[in-house]
Amino acid sequence: MSEATLPTLGSFPGRLLRLYAGLALYGVGIGLQIESRLGGSPWDVFHQGLSIHLGLSIGTWIIVVGAAVMLLWIPLRQRPGIGTLSNVLFLGLFADAAMWLAPEPGPLALRWVYLVLGVVATGAATGLYIGAGLGPGPRDGLMTGLNRLGMSIRSARTLIEVTVLAVGWLLGGTVGLGTVVFALAIGPLSQFFMPLMRPKD
Image (cartoon, rainbow, N blue to C red; front, side, top):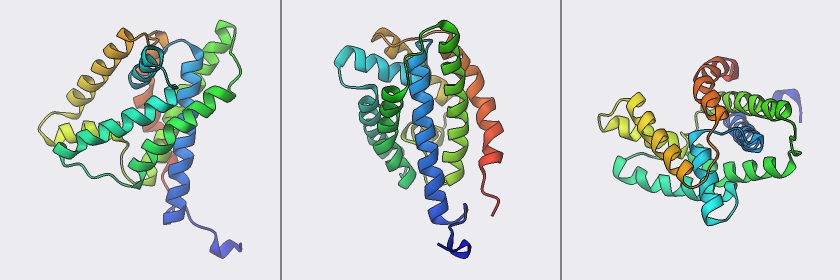
C-alpha cells in the first residue's frame, strides 16, 4: 500500500483503528487491575462479583452486563453507534485474553506495578476510544441518558458506580486500595490522554 493510500487517523478506517486499539488497551487495563488483586474499578468489582457468585469468566460478564445495560437505553432514548456495539462484543474478550496471558504477579510490589499500569492503560484507552467518536460505551451511555432526564452527570455517575460497587462487593468482588486509586486517577488520566490521542488530521 502506497503512502498516499494509507488511512489517516481522522478517516473512517483510522477511527476504527483507534476504536479497536482503545478497546484492546482497555481490556489490558481491566485484566491487569484484576490480576493485581488490589481492587478494580466499580464496574469490574461488579463483573468479578458476578463471576465469583454465578460462574462464567469476568470477560463474559462484561459482555452480558454491557448488553443488559443497552436495554436500559431504550426508555432513555439513547442511540448506539458502532463503538457501542463493538464495546459490548469485544471488551470482555480482550479483558479475558489479558487475564489469561498476564503472568501471576506474585510479590506485592509487582501487584502494584500491575495496578498502576492497568489504571494508566485504562486512561490512555479512554482517550483512544472517545477520540474515535463512534459512539459511547454502554455504561457511559446509561450515564448520559440519565443526564438527559435531568440528573447531573456527576450525580448520575456517582449513583451508578456506587450501586454497582456495593453489589459487586456483596457478591465477593475485590474492593481495595486499587479501587480508590482508580477512582482518583481515572479522571485526570483521561483528561491528560484525550488531547494526545485526538487525530491531528
